[in-house]
Image (cartoon, rainbow, N blue to C red; front, side, top):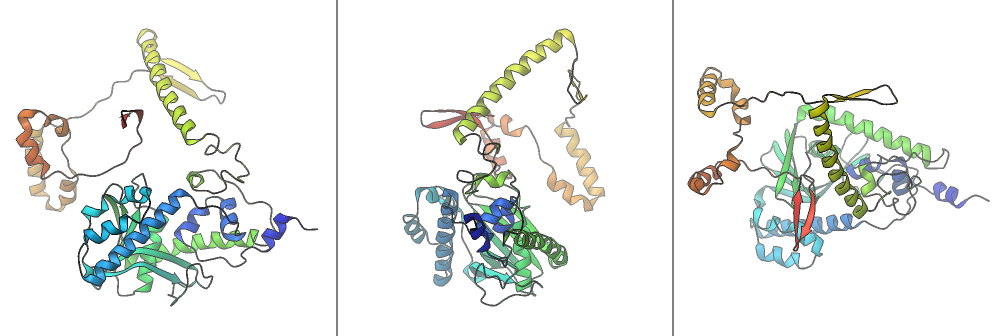
Length: 394
């Protein structure tokens, strides 16, 4: 009698669904991909996924309302929609309310689903996940600035701001340029709505061959996984720990390497406690090590692989350029090299933020605030939580 595992595999998905950004992410672990997309094993949806669905549905409804009413914003409507979503979704969306407006005339669509065949030709009316398509994606918002210039906005409720250097940031512009041959340039914008921050990358028609090669390579990987595991002809899929473990439904109920997977060895609370201990241990150990070097000089250590390490004080030169002298030199340089505008745009002045905090420089701070380029970043901070607020230290 055939095992339950074999019966599950024999009824798996023989023909691969279209390659999408989420399926490509799941391919980081063969077992995760096989469970979700080949064997079609049912698993509960994560809280993060539920929050993302709520956020996307609300924004799609809101923007479609703006288009139909020909308005750049409607805070009353937005507030009404916010009352119907979870607290988690509301927290992620609170900044979006006041820092976004739209030109209804330029909006092409929200939740625009695009499916392409194996030759990157659009398939009309193809449903999401239909195996007739080889590639697919659902674009949160598509804006057409001109007949040749388009923008794709993708909403993220992440807790971390990341660069727009992902498979999605390449797949979505490819999908749109294949759908509309008149588009020459696509700006892909990752919108981190929780912070009001964004990261942008752009592609042109000249990039299409390169983007197609990337998509074909990932599609080949996907097809190979289905060939290996759809009918149980191969052994068990490989299990690979990594960032994908944070959304993997198998982590708590079926990961074959759960005992050794670093993402499952500790609960999030235990992981934080361990991080606090490591930080304090490192601070104490570094202080003691410095004291020893002061008295004894360089300290050496050779590991079991014959790799030698050294701890020592080393002089390091740090160059500071006095403002008065540097400005005159730079002005003279830019006057002789007008093509160096890119360098001018990259230059900033360090040290001002702390210096202008003095009360006597309040007017200067106000004037500088008007020209400051504020960039939102996220960084990991660990610290104590007191009186209802977080007290962080780097």
